[in-house]
Image (cartoon, rainbow, N blue to C red; front, top):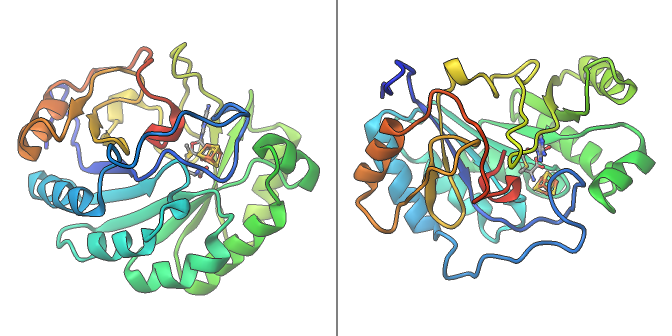
Length: 266
Ligand code: SAM
Ligand code: SF4
């Protein structure tokens, strides 16, 4: 699909839940969030049918995200359903890795190609502080399990405050290089203030080349992380929602208030 700025839109990111087992300081408030009711969360069937339509329209890359996708019951089944859609060339997941030691093998068998795992530091104390209680050993075990399962490549998403030369970022880079992982560095963003920057080692934040659409866990299709433009896929035919989102994709985002990171999925 070509949008009005001649960008080739082929990438769909699907947030399958707004819930999470961590509370990262830059993502969620400490007390948690007002959760979307179960009735409003898209069912796996709805996600599957929508994705089939999106693939028909030209999507070939799909990423499952959240909240934390692995806290949604049956996430492996959803992967299996999506993996069965002919035309998806790249099926990936972004996860905090906490449950990955448990699920990596099943995810691979279900047809997941690869994972991005979030890790901002190698210090157990700092990790616990950033995530408000997470145990870094769970993530490190998850990374190993992903590699052992043959999910490939395993990328590390590392949020940075100002520069890739920060000590934590340097350590994450070193650890990644030594362990066959690909590190990507993401500036801490503020969606409401419209503060965002390009991702080092990845493709995010580059408006001129942005190829993404995002589906929120409560069924809104968003053409841009930094805009409130959204189409409720339950209120119009899927095909129409996709066409409208592509047609309304802004040249560059400004700011957004209607959704947060944990329900758009970053
Ligand atoms: N829970 C999963 C995880 O943490 O990987 C998936 C969802 S999370 C919203 C997706 C990505 O967004 C993570 O890599 C996370 O670090 C990043 N993220 C969350 N809040 C952010 C912020 N304010 N600025 C930049 N990246 C952020
Ligand atoms: Fe949860 Fe991911 Fe947000 Fe951290 S970044 S609170 S792990 S959704």
